[in-house]
Amino acid sequence: MLDENEVVRGTFEDINVHVGLDIHRRDRFDPVPELRALMAEGPMAVLGVEDAPEGRTAWLAAGYDEIRQVLGSDKFSSKLLYRGTAAGFIFPGFLTQYDPPEHTRLRRMVTGPFAIRRIQGFKPQVEKIVEATLDDIESTGGPVDFVPRFGWPIATTVTCDFVGISRDDQAELSRALHASRAERSGKRRLAAGNKFWAYMNQVVTRTRRDPGDDLFGVVVREHGDEITDAELIGVAAFVMGAGGDQVARFLAAAAWLMVEEPEQFAVLRDSPETVPDWLDEVVRYITSDEKTTPRIALEDVRISGCPIKAGDTVTPSFLAANRRNFPGPDDRFDITREKPAHVAFGHGIHHCLGRSLAEMVFRVAIPALAHRFPTLRLAEPDREIKLGQPPLNVEALWLDW
Image (cartoon, rainbow, N blue to C red):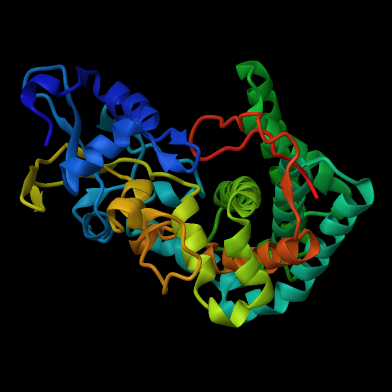
C-alpha cells in the first residue's frame, strides 16, 4: 500500500469522486501511470484517508478476485455517497443504487425482457439496424466521424426499439440523451436531461394504457401493480442510458481498436472459427466502464489481508483488474486469447442487466464493420484522438477507407 506520507487526505467525497475519476483517465486504451502505480502495489491499495479525526479510508480494489469478493458480498452497500456518508438516497428505478431486498424485488420484475431467448429473437432487428447504418456510412463516403455515425445510431436505435420508443421520436430522444452527457454547459446538460426524463414519463403513461411487446409492455403486463410509475420511468432511463450511452462508447472504441490492430481483426474477418472467444478479449481490453461506484463497508471485513472498517469505501476498478490479471506485456490486445476472465460487466447482484443484449449487438456490429470496410484507417493519422472524462469517451473518430 501507499506509504503513510503519500496518502491523499481531503474530504471523503473528493477522494472517492475526484481522485477516483482522475486515476481512471486513459492513455489511449491503457491505464494512466497513476493507476498503474496503484495496480503495482497489490490487489488492494489506498486512494486516500478522510481529513478528520478517525478519518475513514477510501480503498481501490485492483484485483479480479478482490472485486468479485466486494461485489458479491452483502457486507457492502451500493447506495450513493453524499458528503462521504451513505445517505440512503436512491434514484427510483436505478438498479445499481439499490441494496436487497429492494434490489431483489425490482430486478426480478425487469429481468424477464432480457431473457436469452427473447434477445435472440431480437437479433434479426439488430442486423437490419447495423446494415442500414453501414449502408449510410458507405453512401456518404469517407472520411466519416464514426462516433455519431456508427456508435450512436446503432446503440440508440437498438435500445429504443428494444425499450419501445417510437422511431418518430428516436432521433430527438437520442440527441437529448447525448447532450445530457456531452454538453460542456451545465445548464444545457440539465435542460437536455429534463427533456429526456419528461419523454420517459410520457412513454410510461402510454404504456400503462396500452402495453406492447417491448420492455415496457412486458414489465407492465406482468408486474404492473408491483412497480410504481417513478420506478418504471427510472428503469427506462437507466436502460436507455446504459444501452444508448455505454454501448455507443464501446462501439466507437472498438472501431478505433480495429484501425489500430488491423491484422488481428483480419483474423476475425477471414477466419472467425479460429477465434471463438474474440469478444471477451475485445471487452476485456477496452473496458469501456473503468470502474463502478464506491461500495460502503457495512461492517469490518478483511480483503487480501487489508482491514476494511465499517464506513470505509472500496472502489472496484474494472480496468485495473482486467489489465492486472494479465501482468507485464501480457495485458496487450490479443484477439486469439482463449476466453480471458474479466469483470467488464461487473459481478454479483449488480452485474450488467443488459449484458446479453450488449454482447449480441457487439457480435453483430464488429464483424460487420470488419467485413464492410477491410481497409478502414484513420483519416488523419497524425491527429491525436481526444478522450473525454471517464468512462471511456472517444470525442471524435474520423475514419476513411
